[in-house]
Length: 368
Image (cartoon, rainbow, N blue to C red; front, side, top):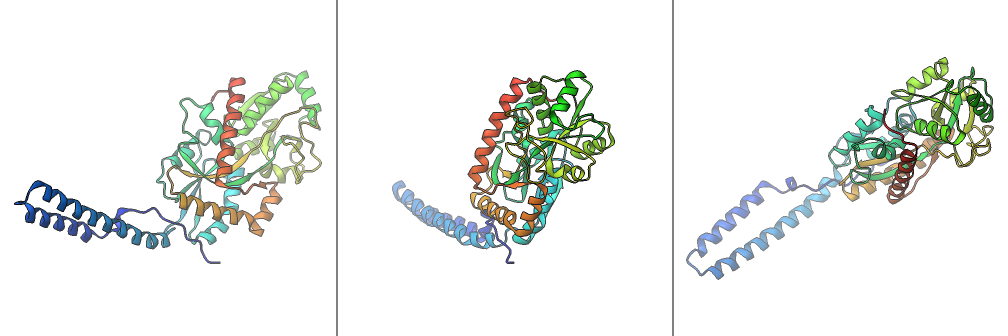
C-alpha cells in the first residue's frame, strides 16, 4: 500500500538566507545611488525594488511548499486518549492505529493522558502545535466539560478543529449478578422499595455513566448513590467483584463479560436494540421513554491546523474505518461507524454540547 502524504504548513525557513542578504544589498545599492536625487525619485526607486523582492519571496514560498508537503508526516503522529487504558476510547484508538500507520507511512502512537474527567489530555492537545502531529480521541466528555467545570477547561469550538467521526456505541445498563433484578422494571421496583441502597458507578464525574445515572434518578424517581472512579478499568474490577451494583457502560467494554454471564445487561439506552446483544431491550421497551445516551468518539486537532492537513487526515481515518479488518472489529464490538464530513462532526459536537448543557443545568449537576 502506498503511504499517504499529507500537506505540511508553509514556513519562511524554506527561503534561503542568501535571498534576505540579496534584498539588503539591493536596497543599499538603490539608496546610495539616489541620495543626490529628489525625494520623489527615491520613493519611486524604493517602491520598484520592494515590489521586485516581494515577488521573489512569493515565488520562493511557492517553490518550497511542494517539497515540504512531500516530507509530511516526517515523524510519528500522536493520538491522545484522555482516559486510562482499557476503556472504549482506548480500544477504538488501538484498533485504528495499526491501519492508519500503514496509510500514513508513519506510526500512529496512542498515548493515554488521563485525569480530571478527560480534561488534562484535551487541554494538552488544545495547546499543541497546530501541525497535524497531535490529535485527540474526543468522546462524550468533550461536549460536557465546558458546562460542567467552571471555569471551562477549554472551548470545544474555538480550541479544536474536527477531523473525523469514528462512531457511536450503545450505552448499556449492567448489574452485578448478585443484584436481585433480571429486568429494568424489577431493578426500579427494588430501588423504590430500598431507597439509597443501590449504588451506581461511573468512570468519572461528567462522563456518560454519571449523567445517565442522574437522568435515571430523575425519570424513574429513585434514589441511587453515585460512586465516581478514576477510569473504566477500576469500575469493571469492582463491578465484577460486587463492590458496586450497577453501571452504565459502553457496550464494547462490557460485551465479553455480558456474554460470559459475569454481568447482567438490563437495558440499552438507544432508540433500537443493539445487534451485538439483541435479547436486551431498550429503556423505552422497559417503560422508561426518551432515555437516550449516545457515547460517541471522534478525532479532533488543535485549532488553526491547516485545512489541507485536516482534509488529508479526515480521508485517512475514513479509509481506515472502511477497511474490512477494522470494520469487522468495530461490528463485533457493537460500534456503529459514522463516516461523514468534517462539518458533520462539527455540527454533531455543537448539538451535543447544547443538549447536555440543558441536562446539566436542569439537574444541577456539578463536578465533585
